[in-house]
Structures are given as structure tokens and as C-alpha cells.
Length: 619
Ligand code: ADP
Ligand code: MG
Image 1 (cartoon, rainbow, N blue to C red):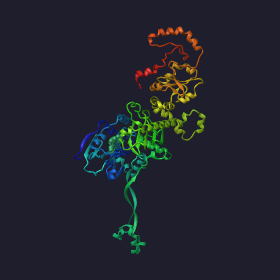
Image 2 (image 1 turned 90 degrees about the vertical axis):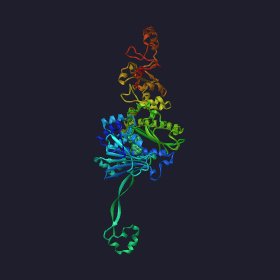
Image 3 (image 1 turned 30 degrees about the vertical axis):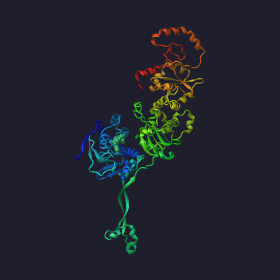
Image 4 (image 1 turned 135 degrees about the vertical axis):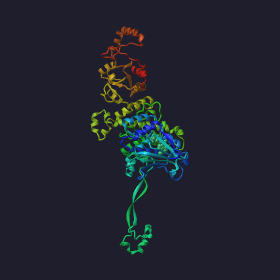
């Protein structure tokens, strides 16, 4: 094109495109849901802006917030069009030429080895999946603040942008034209596209239309020779004809034939799933909704969900999900990011997905959506962020979230204490629920621990969700409630020990006597556990006691006093002998069985394990 301005892709984009183009990945279908998701995002943006400025939507067709898919079988072009916010020339250069999101390198790396493109949408590079099926792509776009432009690329390391002087004006929005590769012919089949929209984009909140062919019955003259002008006109004149011509009954003058016409066919049910009655939404629908919300199209189902309506002063509907897997960087970026993964809607209008006020940081792993009727619509995001209702919403969301997590445990047969009861209640979905809590704990256990540290008001609820291995858990996970149910008569404290690994701790001399006396000791082996135990002081009126620290009491022993007395001189001598080694005290202890002596840390000091962690700064 004569007026084209040429650009080179950012090196990382080029690399990504190369991988996509040469990909042997079989599920090429994903490009469509990525384009539809982008169209939906663009529509959300313009709708949000229109809340404070009605004019912005424009008039007539331009104001229609929908997505249109069209096929050109002859030219082998598939096009997807939206009337969303559109892109200015600068937007085109920036959005379709560079990668903004961090973590994309890691994704590119991973794709090179695994070849799995399924999560592409989560990495902010979904657009480039068009090159799975097309060898040439045009993006025509019109933003309110700029002229209409065409972006084009054959994925050869470069793209071009020209002012659009060829195509019809879009009014506003974006049309993506895919010039399909030879082997991607299936995407010219209407049935295929309908199936894909149904499978991946059913829960998009804007209507998706397909320019679909339709066979219709048309009346045509029975015999070309006999036909006259009069007969070709519409039925309304037929009664007249009958009177006029008696032959009509013997020789029909017209016959019905099939003819193909085209019309916009609606492919999705636009009614938002969260407005429906939870009883009427199927498990499969929730799974699909989760996938489209979280852009997580892996095969795994969410571990749990909660769909509810809150009433009272603050009214809202919400759907929360526990994803099947934690994203790789969940804890890496924990202290740097504030973003929660809940989408906020106000009366069906999407407002934002980066609303930190909705959930505390430790619940950032949840995905979901909140639609509030109480929040005002016509204020800026910043104003909304200050709104007093948010506190109430947040409080309720936390409760519901913790209930939802507890439900995973309640329904998991592995979690059940009572073996006999389990047999009676065994139901068909027991198998499906089996081991789910252990899975949850593996993926998100650290979040629960961070919650105990950070959220004093829900500490007890969170402590109920805590799992650990212990000297009695037999390699499985145990809960504090289980621990308490196994406590020995007269045992007052909950015993635990911290360290590097279970294997190392099992050999610890601190356990000798406790094990011999049949006390259960919890193993805490995660670096975060040391911090955790600085906040978790007690549970159900039982205190926590680190068995490697001073103050361990295993019930009263009358001989203790006598022993202390008779070894007084020895302990004194030891203390002075070790004075230069930073030893606070030397005491007679009943915590050991075979080992003659042991170094213990003081009650309020750091444990040896904590010293180790601080030295390596592993948290
Ligand atoms: P993501 O959607 O995660 O941001 P994509 O690769 O899918 O990543 O899209 C990159 C960017 O291109 C989007 O963030 C958006 O700014 C822009 N974009 C893509 N498609 C459209 C569209 N139909 N309308 C407006 N902007 C779009
Ligand atoms: Mg996208």
C-alpha cells in the first residue's frame, strides 16, 4: 500500500509469532475465543466511558454494542468485528507490536518446550494466536479520537499501518480480517464457528452474531414460458388471479424451491449467569463460565465455587471460584502486587478487574465476579474505590470465600475422620471429591497461612483450614481439629516443631520423649511457618508450644524438683563453662529420652530454624 508506514515487531513478539506460526499445536480453535474476548473487552471499555458521557457511543449502528462474525468463502476471509472502543494509530503500534505484560517471556519459554498454547490469553498475547490459522491479518480500527487505520502483517517480523482509504467507515470499533491458511478451511464452515462460540464464548456479555446462511422456501413460477409480470408479484394478488383464471387449479402456476439467504444469527445467550438462579445453573455451565472469566481453558475444573446473593444494606451478587491450579508467579509477586482477580460490575456494567478493595491480598488466588446494585454507576473508578459499601462487600466476600474452601474439605472423603460413617455415606461423586482438599492445600495452602498472619479477624476460621503432617498423621495431612481429637488426657498444649524437612525433624532429639509418651507433634517445614507461629498463638483454648523451645511441660513429675536440686552444682558449672558461647542458662529437662543433652532456644527468641531462615532470607 502506497501510504503504508512500516514497523518492526518487538523482538519478543517476533519470537512468539514464529513459535505460533510453526506450531504443531493441534488445538488451533483457540484464536476465535481470543478475538471474541478482545472484542468484549473493547465493548466493556466504551460502555464504561459512556456512563459519564452518553455522547461517546455515537448514533445508529455505531451505538450497538455487539460482535459480528462474517465469512467470505471465496476469498477465504474470516472477519470479526466489534463496535468497541477501537484503536488509534498509536494504540495499534503499541498494542499489536509490543508486549506490555510481564511474565510473557516465561510463557514464551514454556511454550517452546511444552507447545501448549491453551493459556495464551492469560499472558496478554492472545491476539497473536490469529497466526495459528491465518498467514495474513488485517486489523481495521476506528477510535473516536483518530481516523480509521489498517494494521496488517504477514507475520514476517514486520507490520504496516496505513490510513484507511479503501474500506467502509466502521463508525467506531475494530474489524479483524483473517486471510485463512489453506489448511484452515474448516473455519469457513458456519457449523464449526457456531460450535466454537458455544464451547468457548457462551458467557460473553455482548451478543455475538454470525452472518449465517439460511435456506428459505421461495415461490417461483412453475413454468418459465407461461409466466407473466403479473404472476411474479406477491401473494396478495392471488385471490384476484383465481377468479380471473380457471386453469389455475389444473396447472399450478408456481412451485416452491429452496434459496439461500443471509441474516444475523445470535449465537450466545446474553443473560448473565450470575443473575440466574444458582439452582438452575449446571456444573458444566459454571465450569465454562470459570474458563472464560479466568481465561483458563485447561482441562481441569475449578476446585470449588460459590454463587450467592447478598441482601440488606448492600446488595450484590457474586460468583467465586477456586481455580484448579495456582499461577506460577502467585507468591513470587505477592508483596509487589495488589491486584485482586475479581471483576467488579455495577448493575450489569463492567467497571474494573483491578479493584484491590474487594478481597484481601491473601485471597488473590480466587477468581470471580461481583455485581453490585448499591454502588453508584456514574462516578470514576477512583471515587468508587472510596465507597463505604466496599467494606461490607469485602467482609461478606471473605466469609463466603472461606466457607467455599471449607466445603472442599467437608465434601472430601479423605478428610473424614470417621471411617464407618464414610462407608454409609459413600455416594457417586465421592470419587470426584476425593483428595480435592489435599490438592487445594498443595496449590494454595500458603495463602491460608498468609491469611492467618495478615487477617486477625478471621484467624480462627483460617486456622480451621490449616493442614500439616505430624508424628501421627501417617504421611497424610491432618487438621487442628483432628489433632485436638487425638490429644492425650491432661494434655494442655498443641506441640509442634519447625525445620527444614519432615525427614530431618523425625530424627530430632526434641521428639524422643514426646514420641515415647505418645504425644503428637506437628511438623512445620515451610519457611512461612515460622512467621505463621508468631501469629497463631492458640486454637480452641489450646496454646501452641514449640518443642524445641524453653517451657515445654509434659505434665507434672514429682521427681523434677529433686533432680533439679541434686544437679544444681553441675548445671552451674556448665553454665560458667559455656559463658563465652552465648548460652543463657543450663537446665535439667525431662524432654529427652536417649540423647544426653540438647540446645534449646529461649521462649521469646528465634527458633534455630528461624535463625536459619533469616540467614538465607528464603521467604
Ligand atoms: P490482552 O487482551 O490480554 O491485553 P491481546 O494480545 O489479546 O492481549 O491484545 C492486546 C491488546 O490489543 C489489547 O490489550 C487491546 O489493547 C488491543 N486490542 C486487541 N483487540 C482489540 C479490539 N478488538 N479492540 C480494541 N483493542 C483491541
Ligand atoms: Mg486478549
